[in-house]
Length: 136
Image (cartoon, rainbow, N blue to C red; front, side, top):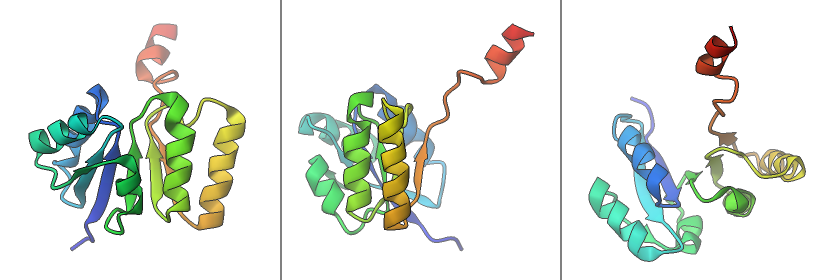
């Protein structure tokens, strides 16, 4: 049986509901914590989806149980949250865009390599099947 990976969701706004629903469908994923700068939002999402812990972003980042930080914050915060996760020894996955500047994106890639951690991001639909079909 595959190892269960503990994920922590940072940013409990609208898009978090989609991530939390999909995570329930994957037995190898366990959402261990929800965090938001507005703790009441983190508590609401945790209760709604049966997540065992709602906490501050700082608490989530230092939690040794978290393997991957799923960063659903606003794009301007993507670099800061992902780099803090990598510095804390966690893998990081950002909602699109990876960062708001190419330079910050490169800094994250370099940091992930240096820390020997995985870095990922949601694919943009800019060149997806729908747009390609429209172009044809």
